Length: 91
Image 1 (cartoon, helix red, strand yellow):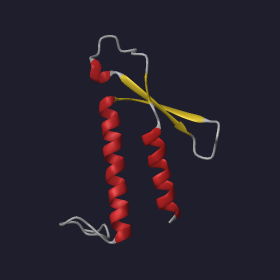
Image 2 (spheres, helix red, strand yellow):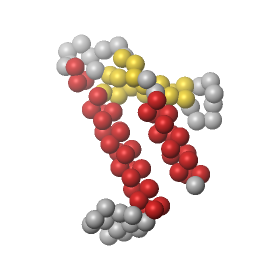
Image 3 (cartoon, one colour):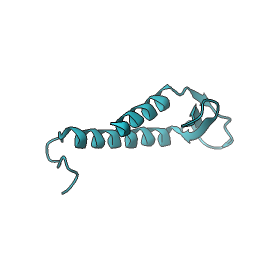
Image 4 (cartoon, helix red, strand yellow):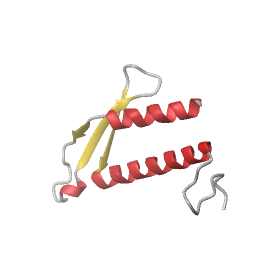
C-alpha cells in the first residue's frame, strides 16, 4: 500500500512539474534536440527542488517507461494481466 502511494505521489509530482525551456546550447542542432527542463520537489524536502533537462525524445521515452512500469506494478497487484501476459511476471 505504501509503495503504491509513493508511486502515485511520484507520478503526480512529475506530471505537475511545469516544463521550462532551457537555453539552447546546441546552436547547430534542430528543434528536436532542444532541451526541456522540468522542476519538481525533492522527496523529503519542502524547499529543495530537482531540475531535470532532457530532449523531447528523452522525455517521451521517460514517460513511456514510467507508464509501462506503473502498468506492470498495478497488474501484478490486482492479479490482472493483458492477454498473453502472466500476472505474476514469469514466463
